Image (tube, rainbow, N blue to C red):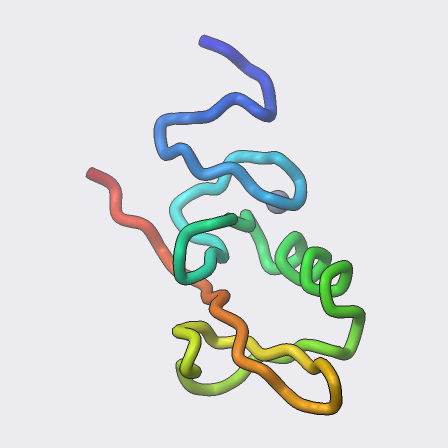
Length: 89
Ligand SMILES: [Zn+2]
C-alpha cells in the first residue's frame, strides 16, 4: 500500500489545495475539475484566485450551479463551486 499524500486513493479525490485525500465530503465545482478537503483549503484557494473579500457564499444555488460568487470588474459573478457529500459504493 502506497502512503504518499499524492497517492490517488480509491475515491480518486485529491485536494487541489493541500494535496491531501478528500474524504466523504468536501468542495467541488460543477464539472468536478477540482476538489477541496475542507473549507479552509477552499477559502485559501478562493483568496488566492479572487482575493480576500472578493468572493462570498450565496444562500441559493446560482446560475452556474454553485453556492458561491466572486467579484470582478465591479460586479458579482456566479461561481460553480459547492459543498457536497459522496456516497460510498
Ligand atoms: Zn485540503
